[in-house]
Length: 119
Image (cartoon, rainbow, N blue to C red; front, top):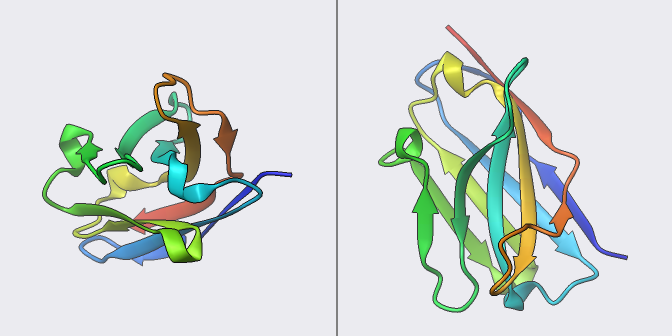
């Protein structure tokens, strides 16, 4: 059974930082691309960024560039999303997801972790 579990969310003041973790089990983590998504209240889920398994290449949505870092530790079957200089507009439920190489859709999803940024 594949499981993805996010952790590290919480309440943070604007300007602060957080590091979210996504711990996986039941899949060969080292062969999956990992993505981070978020969904704010009343809005659609959006892509935050992702890291490929093959070459560790990373992509971010424009609003996250320069203040976010995505990484992975294959030995721990865990992916990370660090966000600095948090803004109230970053308030959302953050999800991690896994997809196999060559697939457009992410197959496995976590339940999410809430990030709330106060002004």
